Length: 319
Image (spheres, rainbow, N blue to C red):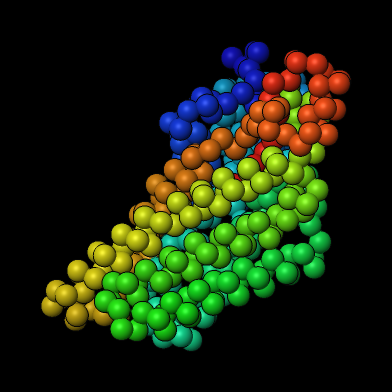
């Protein structure tokens, strides 16, 4: 039943948004965050064995596909190491819904804004570090600088806008957390992955043969990740304030103010259940860049070795 089965072949067409969406719906499933480490290790062993042509007798294709889903959800595509739980995309819904709900609920006072933006940026730093291109190492000092810079940007944006919107309509003030999150993402992700921009990331041909390192590829990949992360947060943090602004005018909502926070957390979860895989699927994870768009020295090196056989290069953009 498994003869000739290629476990690394995409189950769905990764050249289309629909195919990528189905893939990420599978690997960002929040239930995967509850899978025990022992089961994840067994899945990795099965995937590694399948790659080596050593498939356990009696294994079905569905078993192999499920093992690959577990592997993709919990192990880094570059290093093969198990990622920490908080940084996995399968934890984005439970982690993101709690933090987003709290940021949207506790936005009225400066201390609350400062606290929840700090917690959110701490969580984002873990996610960004976990989902970097692992072929580009980063030092503890660089991690610290990225964390402090991104947190400072989020706090400055949130506190500044919070004070600026004191006289603005209430709904405008509710959108301050999104502005802070978007601004921080524009800083946090490039800073956390600065080594990729400075030294470049490994690019390969279509057969995964290494061709060199490209800074332009890194910039393209990181820009796409920034867009994806902001898109991931946008619907919940823009639409939910409108919903809550209207709901809070009803008498029954005024009687259950203590439940406004939990309600926003649950509604954020509803948005993120779809937006996490949708945002991840905006761009292919295995990104490509035309040979003509590479640095002149790298392009010349590739042409000298391979002629016109390599029209474009591929690389892992991260998530």
